Structures are given as C-alpha cells and as structure tokens.
Image 1: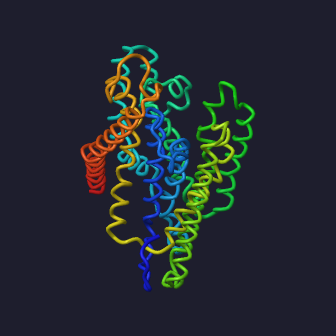
Image 2: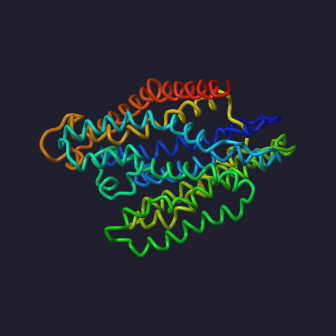
Image 3: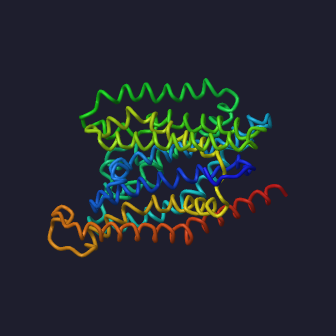
Amino acid sequence: MGVLSRTPAPIDCDRPASADFLRVLAAWAVGAFHIWQQSWYSRPAAEHWLRAGSVGVDFLVMLSAFCLFLPWANAAAQGRPLPQTRPAEFYRHRAARLLPAYYASLLFSLALAVYRSGWSRALAVDLFTHLTLTQQLFPACYIGTQLNAVSWTLTVFALFYLVFPLLAPLCARHPLPVLGALCGVQLVYSLWTLPQYGGYAYPLLFNQFPAFCGVLAVGMAAALVFARLARGGWTQHFLLRAGCTVLGMAALVRLNALMHAQAAAAEYQRFQLVNRMPLVIAAAAVVVGFGLGLTLPAPVQRLLRGLAALTYSFYLWHQMLTVFLKYDLHLPAWQGVTPPNQLGDKVWMHRADMLYWAAALTVGAAAYFLLEKPAASALHQIAQKMRAEKAR
C-alpha cells in the first residue's frame, strides 16, 4: 500500500498504517449506516456500504484484538520475553483511554432522555448498566435503551479486556489451541442462536460477546501472521512487497463483494451472523496485506493516524447527535409528524446528510481534542505519579 520505490521503506512492525486505514474505513461505514438511516440519502457507488455499514463494528472488534495483541505477537516472533503487563495496570490504561469520552457522551444522552421523558426507575437502571458497561446483558438497557444506542459495543470490548491479560500470554505460547477454542465458542454459540432467528430473543443474542470470540481469534491470528512476516530479508525486495500490496487490494475487493452480499441479504441479521467470519477474515487480510506491502508516504500515514485517533469519539457521538438534530431540533428544518425523507424530499435528504456528517465530525473532533486526549493524558500522568510514589 503506497508509492513505488526500488528500496522499500521498513515495515512498521508496531503500528502498521493499514490498521489505521481499516479503523477509518470501519468507523466511516458505521457512521454512514446510521446517518443514512436518518437521511435516506445514498450515493450509488457506495450504497451497499451504507446499508451494510453496521458490520463495521465487527471490523473494529477484530482490529482491537489485532492491535492489542501485536506486542505479544512481535515478542513471540522474535523470541523475546513476553510483555509483563499486570491486569490492574492494563485495566487502568484501558479505562483511562475509553471511559472519560464515553461518560461525557453518556451524560449528554442522559440529559436528552430526561428532557424527552423525565426521570424514572427504568432510566435509573439503564444509567447504572451503562455506567458499569453491562448494558448489553439486559434487554431493556440494550434494545430498549433510552441512552446512547451505539454504546452496546463497549460491553463486548469490556468483556474482551477483562480476559485479555490472561488470553494474550496464553495465545502467544499456545496459539493454535487458544485460537481454536475461541473459534469453537463462536461456532457453538452461533449454532445455538441461529434457530432462534425471527423470534424476540434473536436481536438480543446475535451481537453478544460469545458471537465475537472467533472474530477476536481472527484479529490475534492476523497479528501473529503479520509479526512473523514483517521482518527478514524479503522485506527489502520491491516485487515481493508489491505483491503483498496486490494481495491487500484483492482482500479489499473481496471485502467489498461481501459487503454487497450483506446489503442485499433479505435476512440481514441472520446473514451477518452466518458470514461474520468471512467478513472479518477479509478485513484482517486487508490489514496484513497492506501492512506488509509498499509503504505509504509519511504525510499520508500521519493523516491516517490522525483520522484513526478521532474514530472513537466520532463513534460515540454520531448516532445520537444525528437523532437529536433530526427529531429534537427538526434540522434541517421540517414541520409536522412525518420526516421529509419519508415524503421523498430529496433536497432535504441531501441537506440532512451534509448537516449530520458535519455535526458528527465537528463534535467528534472537539470531543477528542478537548476531552478524550487531555483526560487520557491527565490520568496517565496521575498513574505515573502513583507508581513513582510507591517505588520510593
């Protein structure tokens, strides 16, 4: 992935730009899906990504496993001692990274919920589960939540983070049994869930943590493959690196075809569960292929890294902000009880699409620079001071 050169630049073994590329693509897909749901404005060339964009969450889960496990994979590939991260330190780092921005968005959604319906016992329970990242485990707080609807994914991430300090060193030492066990969990869970399609329970089940265990295995396996191949004399050969770029392009084409099939599926949620592994394997192949391929110019890498940094705050704010603008503020301006998109007003659809994207990107960027980044830095400094005091 990058410019032609007879002397390929070294591969970034710790943070390949391809991971940033997939993160941006996945976040865009999820945002496009939710904004399209409200505006109904679509672009023919990318319409299948709009309709199937919710699958971007699967890519983000796989990518989280890839990025978190990569230091262990690199150590195993080089025969170095594995990283010695204590669970408490790992949890503290993850909390500092995720919770400040999440709680800020949760506070906004809570204010909206109180404004719309007032305070209630159900809202109190909803709030408690969201504060503890357990919302997905309770139907009323997951499917029927009054708060930030996209935050269910944090339950999946929280459960993954809970087991990761044990899972990472175990997988680095015994990859095949661990990865096989994770895939087995997803397979058994999926086979149990599929017969319930069409019933009340299925929407509550198909995105639960066990349904992503194989996805996590794909991300960790991709990290192992990337770490094994990212070093050695072959990386200095232009044609071999160019071949990896071609493989990355082929994987992206395959991913695009799978997104076409996902968008066209009559039984959308069933198709997603059945084809979850092919989709994330294609996405992982994009990361590995481009990661081992020709290197992008430094300015493009910096741009991708900057955009990737904004994706978390963007993800937290885009959906609820879009709904707030459309139904609470009636923007772009409309009157009555039926939104203009349902009346076929294409001019309004286009304006709505532009407004919702502009708002989501602006608020997401502001949340990152004014809250997420400073809070993570401050909490990191506090943790460093506490460790320094204990060491005295």
